[in-house]
Length: 102
Image (cartoon, rainbow, N blue to C red):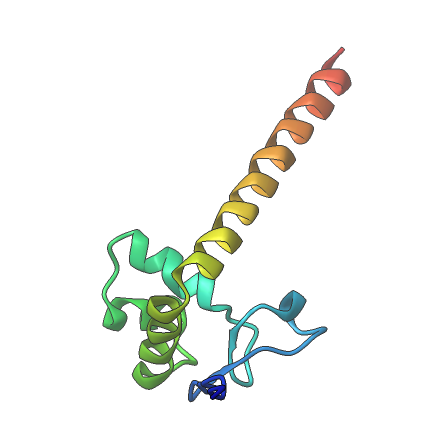
């Protein structure tokens, strides 16, 4: 007997093609779950995260964290991809500035 796949919805979290590249975001914002997780990895508490994102509420922050705890591989991969992009961007910028200084 086949079992139906469990579908879980997350209050306050949406994933839409064309919005932040289809990444999970806090509803009606462009704040991605990975942005909240990055703050968590910096040691910020949910309350401290509200300073960075004053338009959010605590329920939205906790929903983003819940999504992360349920999908760590997805969010970690997104964070790694962003870090690779930032590193590449900094290298290209440094190379450009070296060429301009000559």
